[in-house]
Every structure is written in C-alpha cells, then in structure tokens.
Image (cartoon, rainbow over all chains, first blue to last red; front, side, top):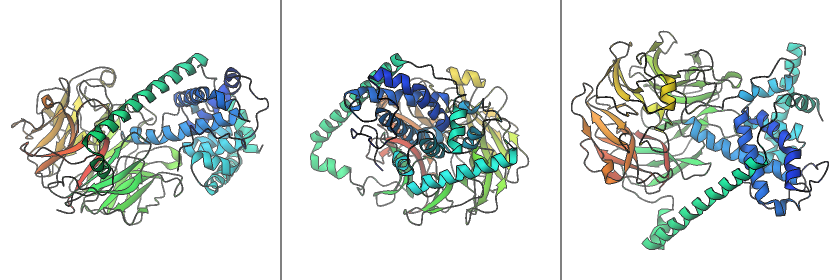
Length: 177
Length: 425
C-alpha cells in the first residue's frame, strides 16, 4: 500500500470545486474551516484535526506551483490530508498504543447533543470508518476514490457506508429524531 | 447528497471554527522542511558509513535472514520501527537468524506460556474494521483472528494458556478489562469497569491464574494519553476484589515522561510492575508525587514491593528515577531502569533490597533501559542507544552478573516491544 502524499499526479477525478482558487491564500480561506471540521469528525480531536489540517496545507503550499495548475487543487488538499491522517493514525497506533490506551481524546465530540444524529452515529465508529463516510458523504468521492485514499478495498468503504446508514436508520427509529 | 450526508453537513456546522491562520501553515512548512533536511543528512551519513565498511557487507545486513548473535536461550520476539508507519514482528532464535513474521501496526504483544504463539492486536482493516485479538505461531504461520463478541485490544495470556485478558471496546468506547477463551474468543467475562473516562491495562495474570495485575488511569483521560498517570491494581478474574496497590501520594507514569536521562521513546508501562513468581507480592516503580507533579516535573521515583492483597508497600532501594520493575522468574532478583543523573542504566537488586548491582554503565556512552528476563533467569534483554536519536537503538542482552554484554540485533531502530520465549531452548 503506497503512500499517496507527495504524488505530483493531478487529482483530476476529484469532485470539482465551485470556483478555482486564484492563489494559495484563496484555497486556504475557502477550505480551512471545512477541512478542519471534516477532520474533527474523522479524528474526534480538535488538536489532531488542526495538526493534520496544517500539515496538509503546508504540503500543498510547498507544491503550489504544480498544484495550482491542477484542475482541482482542493481535491489534492483532501487527498493530502487523508494521507497525513493515515500516516499519523498508524504512527499514533504505534506510539500511543504502546501506552495501552486506544483512541484519541475525543474532545471534538464533547459538545454533540441529541439533535446531532449524524455525529452521534459516527461517534460510535473508528476513525478510519468515519473517514470513509465523510469522504463519500460530505466530500463527494466515490467508493473507489475513498478506498484509494484510505488504502482499503472499495468493498470495505461500501460496507462501512451501508453500516452507517443502517445505524442512522436504527438510531432515528429508536430515538424518534 | 444522501440523508446521512445532509445531516453530517448540518451537524458539522456546529463544530467551532479552527484558530490557525496562514502564518501557522508557513511555520509548519518551515518545520517540515527542517525535518526533511535532518533526515536527509542522517541518510547521507548512514550511506557514507555504510560505504566505509564495504557495500557487500552493507547489503548483506539489510537482507531478512541474516544471522546475528543468537540469544543465550530461547527465542526473542520483538517489534521495531525505523521511522515509517509500519513495523513487523521479528524473531531471533538459537540459529541467530532474524525472521520477519507478519506486519504489525501496534507494538504490544504477549507470548503464550509455552512460548509457541504470539497474541497481538490485529487491526488489518481489510480483515476487520475493528481491533480484534490475533494469534500467530512463533514461526509466522497460522495467523488467525479471534472474533470476540466485544472488540478487544488483547494484552496477556493466562498462565495455563487457555484464556487472555484485554481492553474491551463495545460500541467503540473502552469500558474495562475482559477475558476470553483463546480457542474461539468465546466465554467473555467483563472483569473491570473503570470509573469515569479512565482506561485499564492488564499487565499480567498472577502465576496461579486467579488474579490480574493492571494499571488504571489515575485521572479521567478519555482515551489515549501518553502523559496520563496510572495507579496499579489487582482484581480477581471474576471481577471481584479490586485492590489498589500503590500507596497514597504515589502514582505510576507518565510513561513517555521527560524524566531526565530517559530515552526519547518511552519505557513501556507494562514493564512498570510485575508479580513475584509465587504470586504473593508485586514489584512496581512509582513516582512519589501527585499525578500533576508527575506529569509536569521531575519527581523522585521509587522501586516498591507490596503484598498482593495490598498491604506492606515499601521501597527497597532509595528513591531515584526508577522507571520499571521486573521480577526474575526464579524470584531472586528485581531488574529495573534508573534514569538519573544523565542517562538510564540497568540495575538488579534482591527483593529484600540487598545485593544492588549495576548491570550496565552509561559511562560507556550507551543508554540502557527496559530490561526483561530470560525464561531461565540467567540473562536480561534490554534496549541500548549510543546517543539520543530515537531510531538508533539496538537490543542487547547480558548475563545476570553483567558478563557477556552482547548486541543481539544489527539494525538501528526504535525497539518498541520485546519478549523472550522459552521455545528453542
């Protein structure tokens, strides 16, 4: 399973942005909040989300000359962010799990209330499961594209999809939301 | 967009916006570039060094099945990282051949009592979306998952090899220790229920299999927190009789602490305590401090022995910067790492506090830490590092009298977890 970050290949088949950013600053201001919130959902940690967001933006900035010529710089940003997440997640498993606790401190989910059914559904999932869901449901990637970003099989992403939707349905039925 | 997607979009809007700006991104970029330069310099130095000793020899060393000095007895199992996201299980047996078994993303594992199998947490995402206990034979064959009804992060085998203990994650949230059968993952028993947002970590079953020694977060941490401090407990395997062993005003960890002289990677917390072989006592290393003091400052850390029912906790050597406590299988010695004044060294002492002996000397330029015993108590295995680089350590062993200090591995790396199987003796 190769690392994707750092690849110079354009990410042409990613969902198109509404408007091509003229500069890195434009991309940053257009994507910062959304990317951060997506990563909050994936990692469950504001600190992790901020670290990954900054890493991803920094890597895009370093390659801006070529990224700016891509059809969809935001797609490249998402892909880079998922690569950083993958690398950090594995590294964190090695480093943090050696101290035996599993999972990061999930402060991003602390303020979730009863009405936020989608976040409640995702909260019960592992970070990589959440990543599969937000890539497909929020960022609009296909199962195949999400699978490539996460280094798993498309069938795995589709199974996670099905599982999340089933959980949502059951959750709504039992909580009458 | 589907209903789930629409709900997610709506819910995500409630997440408070981030506070970093462009200037933070630019600083991050500078840091990334600096790190790359350091790595490139290290690689260049390594290449130069390799060239100096000859390319043939160098290429020989990076092959998988290269003989190294064999351990004096049994087989060593270890994981190591050279800086990438992946690691593997490796073994070195009597033939001195390093064998790479299976990819491994976690570094914790437990060797079965007969030395034939390794229990480990398996999170191969294409096999299971959750963490499940995995077992693999010592030769890398017969890798299998135990599909427990509750996802489990496995820690230790029972002494008869029939069960194991681990942290359970029903619904994705850890809720204490469970035990299950090794044969099929069935027969689940919920053993501990930590209060609040704390985590439990099983260190070992008692030698008779009736109790489990475990660590519990001293304060609410809500998940992984390498800076968390812990207390040490025992519990009967049916969940009854939870007893805290460390005295008031002491705490274990943190295990990635910046204690003076400790290596850049942590001394593993599961080495912080161990049973006496007769199961009547426990040895542990603890800070004489509150959790806050232990997390944020350099505090004295002592080596304690306590009766297994919780009475009679006392230090057996003067307080220092003691980081772990490993009772020898024959009951004669307790091995530990002492970190001060500058770099860690390995010591052994009789359980009554007599016979203190320094096994390694950092005056040689090497830091040494994290001792574990050979199954026959004749030797110790530990990590040594010639400097302060994280990925520059090797595994070494020495006889209990300090003789025959020998380098086992030949790949500078971060040696994360290691165990000593009697198999192959």
